[in-house]
Every structure is written in structure tokens, then in C-alpha cells.
Image (tube, rainbow, N blue to C red; front, side, top):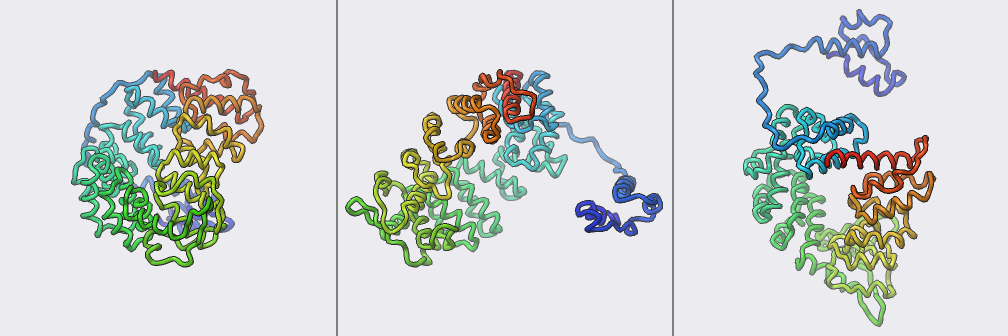
Length: 467
């Protein structure tokens, strides 16, 4: 409609910056607007647009949705779901869906459109909504283009036509699931279409090879190191560093040994003097971040990409010459996270080593969950407790959840604990939701303590209703 875009611009920028030009609107609106302002014009224009739509004719009935496979939960649980979809405690929605699915409950069909809308711009919720929709997912996806992510459910049939003729999301889902079921077949499918894909698609699909990664992928990943796209090359190098026994790992080990000597109880480092073309091909970034010199940055990346199997944990105790010890420590932290090495992560945390671009929480996450509660007290002496536990997968182990709630119960309502309380409210597991803090007076003020208690009680009641 003529003039509509101008109204939108004036509303967004303000009439001081972008005065509304009502003369651009259709005459019927101008005649009725009189002395009205921007909002009056917008209201009239909205009605004008709606009135101008032609009614659809000769529409057949929608195909019936597939039936439900499982029973519905109790009405009280469904009311709680509706409240979350309405915006109340909506961050617990994913937990409700997982809990309902684990207990064999179906989602009422009347709530599926709202769930699809909720997940539309929240990618982390999409697998949960696809699971909740079940056989109705594709039916819903056909009703609204903005719900097309629900077509991902179709890929479960492993239909090859989705790979050759599907949309971008269907193809990605097919490749991801095919990789889980038959890694070699998925690699071959990717190899066949590789030359025809865009750089962004190549990078996206290549990252999916992380699932089921093995030496069978090495040849293809090596060829990807010569790709035109820098992002593709970066992902290929990252994946090759994870392939045990790869030529890539051997090249990095050779480079490390050419710049590092262990002699008489000292780690003697001779930093690289130049960045060769071969080093760049293997993913060594030439641009150093702030706070570290170029040569030290190159060396850090070499060590970080070298298999930990050629290094010794005892090196953590040795003095370093030729560079700051933090350079090696940051490289070892990177390698420990990449390889998921419990031994290296444990020792790096024990030594309070520098972790570079990695956070101590990432090293803590490498440890078995039963070790977290023992490691946290020592680590919190050097970093914020909320930052430390905020990076851990949820739900936490019961022992860690109880420890954090015990701590919060002791500190009153001091503002400095608000972030930790917000994290703990969602992270403590179901069997800790009856913690004594939920039975203590939280006061009338809107404090973090009150919000914590309300969330814990909300989650506890949610599980009770779904039981």
C-alpha cells in the first residue's frame, strides 16, 4: 500500500527525525484522518489494508492431522504448559517438554502451533518441538512457512530424496542423521555434492562430520585444507586435529619439536621466526590477538593442535624459557578441551594454569560430573563462582546443586549473588528442588532470593504434575 513504509519509518525513528508524510497515503485515508497524528494514520492504514484483501475462494478442507500416539498428561500439567507458552516462567518450557516426553506424555494438539511459534527463533528448542509434534510435525510445517523447521522430522525416514531435493534445513538434518547412522555413507554423500555447494553450505556441512569422526575422514578433510573458503579451511583443520593418528597431528608434532626442547628439567622454547605457507595451510592463523606477540601466537597454535599423547603431564611442573609459561599452558588447555582429556584438564585446574581463550569452566566440564563438587571450592578462589558453574551442562549433579543452594541460603539478599541465583534456579536437578531454601521466608520485595525460590517451587510443582 502506498505510504505504508513511510509510516513504519516514522514510527521507528520518531517523527522528529523522520516526519510523517500523510500526503503519501491513499486519498480515502487522508480524508478521514483530519487532524490526526501518526498513530491515527497507522490505525486507518491497517484497516484499509485489511479491507482490501480479496477473500479466498474454492478452498478445500485442510487434510486431517495424524492422530496422537500417546496419552495426555493431567489437566493441571496442561495448564502449566499454557502458562509458559503465555510467557510465565517460559525458560522452563524445554524442561517441561523433556520431562513429559520421558514420562510418555503427549502434547495437546491445540498447543502445537504456539510451540512452533516459540521455537521458530529459538534453535535450541526445535528438536524438542519436533519430538513433541511427532507425526504431526510435517503436517504443521505445511501450514506455515515459518514452521518449516518442523520438516526436519521427515529426515528421520532417511529418505535420500531429502538430500538431493530437500530444502537447506532438510538436507542438513538428513546429513546429520545419516552421519549418526552410517558415517561412511554420509561422507560419500557429501563428497559427491561438494563442488556444487556454496562456501557457507560447505562450511556448515563440513562441521557435521565432527559426529563419528575417524581416520576414514582424513583424506577428505586434508583436501578441504585447500578450499577457497577460509572458514572451510578453519573447520577442516579443527577436525583434523581431532583425528587420532592423522598426518595432520604428525605435522604439528614435528613443528612443536622443532621449537621445543626438554633439557635438564627445563622447557626451552625457540619461537617460530616466520609463518610458512604450509603452516597457514594447516590452519595457523597469522593474526595474533591482543596481549600476545605474533611468534608466541603461532607457537601456541602449533602446540594446541599437537596430540597430547606426545607430551608429558610432568611438563606442567617445569620452568619455561623462551616464552611466557602462560603460552604453553593456554595451548595445553586448548588441547585438553579438544581431546576431552580428563587427566590434562584435572592437572591444569589443580595447577591453576592459564587457560587462554578457554575458561576454567570448559576444563571443569571435561571432568566427570562427580568431580565437579570437589573442584569448585578451590577454583572459586581464583574466579567468580557464577562464571565457573554457569558454563557447566545442566542439570547439575545433585551434590553440586545442593552445595550451590546451601551457599545461597547463607548470604541473605546481597546483590552480588543475583547472577549465581539466576543460574542455579534452572540448573539444579529435580531431586534438589525441595531444598530447605524453598521453605524459608523470601520476603515481599522482588529480590533475587524471592525469584530463586519461586522458580524452584515452580519447577518442583511441574515435575509433581507430570508424575
